[in-house]
Image (cartoon, rainbow, N blue to C red; front, side, top):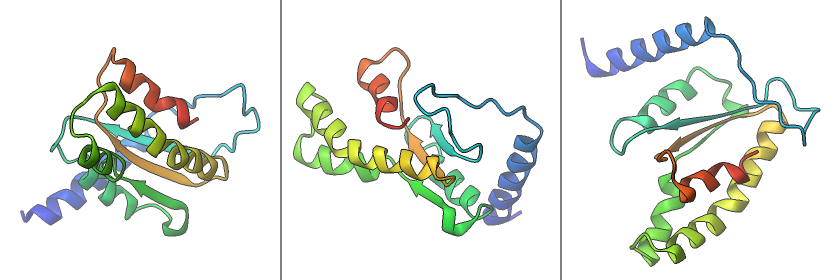
Length: 136
C-alpha cells in the first residue's frame, strides 16, 4: 500500500476511534462560559515522530475556516537561531515569543475554533510546565 494511502487510512481510523472515546473537557473556572466546541489539541512527542504530519492529515478532515495548525518549530526555531543554547535566557525569549501566539490561540478556541498544536514537552520540567500557562 502506498505511504500516502496508509497515512490517510491511519488518520481515518484514528478519527473513528476518537469518536468512541469519552469527552473529557477541562473546565476553566476563569471561563465558565466556555464554548463546548472550543478545542486546543496538543500532540506531544519526541522530535521526528510525525506529529506535524498527523495533525496536517487530521486538519484535512476538519472545517477549513475554523481549524488552525501551529507547529512548535514556528516558535522555537527563531529563538534557537538567536540563542542556540538552552539557557534561562533562551527559555525566557521562547516564552515571550509564544505568549501573544498562545493568547490568540486561546481566543480562537473560546470562539469555537479548533487549534491543533505540536509540542515536545518533558514531564517534570519547569520550562515545559509553563508552556500551558498562556494557552488557557
